[in-house]
Length: 420
Ligand code: GLY
Image (cartoon, rainbow, N blue to C red; front, side):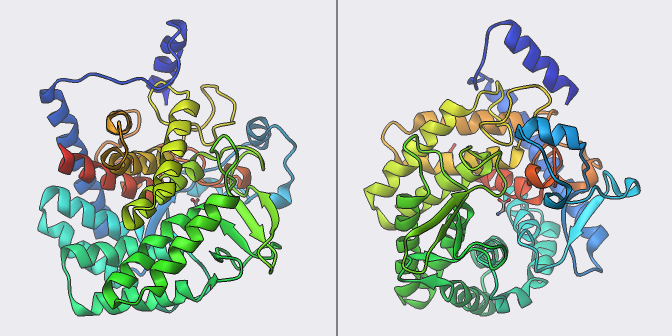
């Protein structure tokens, strides 16, 4: 991140703080988009070739940490039993793979679909089909809300770009398992089955609603959509603070009252974990598009405005938590930025005075497409973007690529190009 730090230091010296719009000519604009597509296709195809004969997906690069660094970021003492052990030295920087039951397994096939759409390259389509099919057994998973991410990002895109009847069956069977996690007394889908919470619901769960909306479209049965909208209303009521930042985890008692409000991946229970704020603006924009309920639009606008206010970096790529120390050493989260960019492009078309969200999304995309974040071909273990953070409080995936950063980056690029 050397160039990045130099730029940040110059910005501070000039008294410039906060994300700023960048003007570029049309010629330069074509160049950055063309380069981004080129890098994406190269990285994805070489990764797919490497993993063709396996049953796994690429997730990230192994990263490590210093305990003192975690403590400085979190502002409190860290105990070894709350964090993942550092990986063996020989793994550091190497590609980290995951099984198909991992919550991130749908993002690599999804990225292949988006890259195919962006480039028209048939090899990407062939690999997208191959890696999507690998996820077929996920339709049987019942123990997590993440099946929405896993199956919608893969099979959902397959249905758009290469439809066939078997895809519909996978989507509906998975939606049935997600729907089975909805509790009408609580008014929410249960997120996790681990931990000591009574009924944990995380803000990320907003992203899984898209699968339920699709299931209603495919079957004509309104129950999926109704559960999704109830989940969104309950979350709107309980997850947000008066300043429109949100908690990561809200756990409910069986009667629907709130048991506890906490963080899992953020700095502390009262902080604004960056990716969570991204999930929130994405989720409410989606719910408004689906329902035309103005309460969802208002919520998306409030969260979007808060994100723009609270992002203090000159390049618009947030620190891993909005309440993390604003220092050059603080890790960024490119994945949060990519989610925000994708949501903002949609929001720009729905909100009155929406142009500011489109401008902001463009600024994020330009930053992510510059050498500070975009990998060089053949580098970065085949991932497209650098500098995301998975879960700093667990010492996990710090300042490293993440497959979902790549996915939402390509999704946002695609939306950006469609709107031009
Ligand atoms: N859904 C987990 C995450 O955002 O890291």
